[in-house]
Length: 123
Image (tube, rainbow, N blue to C red; front, side):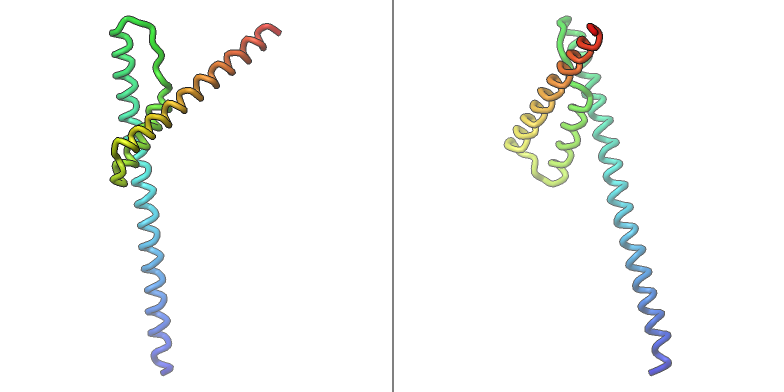
């Protein structure tokens, strides 16, 4: 029995080491996937911003374009819905409503910021 103790210890150590290595690889893989998803969504969002700006410019009318963060949020959530196979008319409508709320919040924040600047300027 004494001869098996070093063998069992070595086997247990190898199993622990292998498990730790596999866990590290899984964590790194998930982090890498998340970074790639963010990068891809950012690229798509910036292209969407450019297209919106071109359309607005060609229309010849003064029009407001949402902040790039709105586009990024939309495309991140859209990718998440696609990855989870949850994209349908209901979830797309909810995403659009969520984006509308973000746009409204940004407008409100911008108005408040402009008001603060006016007050500071008047003082």
